[in-house]
Image 1 (cartoon, rainbow, N blue to C red):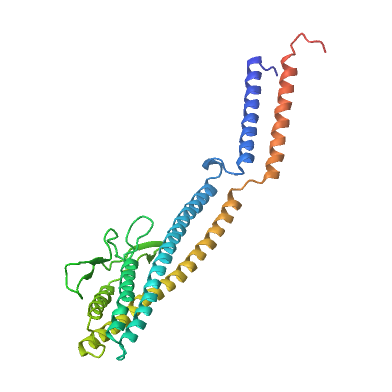
Image 2 (image 1 turned 180 degrees about the vertical axis):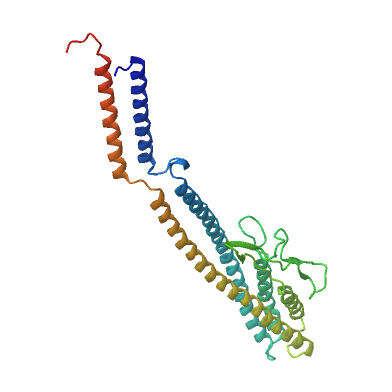
Length: 303
């Protein structure tokens, strides 16, 4: 059977092109380590990989949210614990002040410490995060948690100006976590403390005066209430952090399983690919040699 030169050239060109395309494709596979270059290479596994990668992206966002909430909780816990420490010191001072043997000078001397303690509580209550937002104001983070009115009478100068709403953060599929705290109720202690400071500042204050003793008792009760309130928030944060650690560990395990599946489905078998590449290269070289030899033949070539 005779084959026209143009037909033969077209067949050889097509063969060379196919081999070159396969060499290029396998080379790309070996370069990036991925078995599937296009969805059409393996439609079923392509869909599986897409789902796994989408889930991985979601898990990564969950873990990022958890890290952000844990950082916020650590700062909240530190500030709240500072308040509890201050309250312990303040309560000890008031127990001492309630001793009927104290002189006016003794009670006056306690004012400096109580004033520093009051200001420290106020400072911690109005703590800010790295972005300048108030962390104990509920959801109104641009407003100080505790407001102070110098023109008001002692015992009513402090008010809680935030709210008690929760900032919910998504940390899993259908799982949310409260990401903030508030110090509503602390203003009562600050007002009682402010009243105590005013009372003990009087030059002739008497430790056995019923009015003085009533002020001290109310403030002691206020310290107990506030310590229970703030200490309870510290305990809640500790529990929340443990829950977040467990959730994050679960996410990590799922992520590891997903990554293993992605490798199993999409990773290239380098050994098989190398053999395949070598075969295409050999076929391409043989085609070039055959094309070269046959192209030099003619009907008049001597045998």
